[in-house]
Image (cartoon, rainbow over all chains, first blue to last red; front, side, top):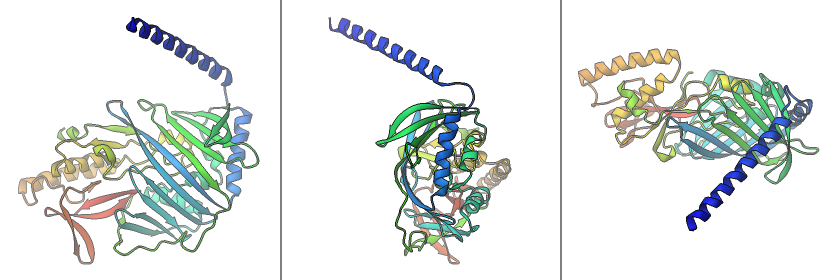
Length: 253
Length: 160
C-alpha cells in the first residue's frame, strides 16, 4: 500500500515536472527571437555606460566557479571579493575564498599582488591608467586583474563582441533588488546579465555558461552591495608589507 | 604515460575571472591540487576578453586529484603535467625537464624522486623549512630547494 502510494506520488511529480518543463520551454521559445533585441542592447548599454561614469565606487561580490572533473562530476568553489575603484588610476581588490586569499593593489604606478596567508607579495611598475594597467597585467604577466569588467570604458563592446543573439528574459530580483534579466548568446558561451531597474542601472549579476565544455560549467558573480559614495583613505590604494612578509618575483609569462 | 596516473581527476574548467577569478592555489579543498591552467583563463565577459573571447581563451585547468601517493614523485609528475598544460614553448621545456629529470635520477645526484631544476610546482611537499641564502629565502624540502614566485595570479614554487 505504501509503495503504491509512493508510486502514485512519483508519477504525479514526474507529470508536474514534465508540465513545468514543457511550459518553460515554450516560454523560452516564444521569448527568444533571432538576433539581438534592441531592448536587450539598450539595457546592457545603459548599465555599462552608467558604470563607466562612476568615478569612485566599491563593489562587494560573491563569485561561484564550477569545475568539472573528468568523471563529469561538478565541483563548486566560492569566493567573496571587494573591489575599490577610483578612476582614473587606482584599484584595490581583496578576495577570500576556497581556493585563494589574495589582495591586488594598484596605486597608479605600481601593481602589487599579495597573498596574506602565504606572507608573500610581488610588485611591478605598471602603466598609469587603469585600462593600461589591466592590459599590461593580462598580456605581460598573465594576471587577471580583479574588477576589470567594471573598469573598461568600452565594456559594452567587449561584452557584445561575437554575440549573435540576445533578448530580455523578463523581470527578476537579485539580492532583493528588482532587475531586468538579459540573456545573450555567443559562440561557445551563453551570458546572462541582471541589470538593476531604475535610475541606477547597475549590473547585479553575471552568469556565464561555457556550453562546449562537458557539463557546461558556469561562472557566476553576484554583486551583493554597490557603494557609489565610498570613503577611501590613504591606505586604500597603498601597500605596506607587514613584518615577516617577503617579496618574491613574477615569473615572466 | 606514467604521469597521467596523477591526473586522476583531470579537469577542465571554465574559469572566467569576471571580477577576477579563482586562480587556484595550493591547498585547495577536497584534496585537490590545482595545477596551473593552460594559459588563458577563461575571460570573464568583461575582462579584455569578450564573451566570444571567453570561449577562445577557455581555460583548461588541470586539476590533479590528490592520490594516496602524493609524494615527491607525484609532485614532480604534477609539475610535468602542469608544464604540459602550458604553452607549446613550455611543453618543449617540459621535454627538456623530463630529460633532465631522467639524467638526474640516473645520476642520483638529487634525492630520489626530486623534481627537475626549473620545474614549477603549485604546492610544496611536506616537511619544508625556510632557509635564507644570499638574502633570498628558499624552502628546503628534504634537500630540494624551492623559491616562491607568482606565475600569473598563482603562487608557485620554482625548483632550484
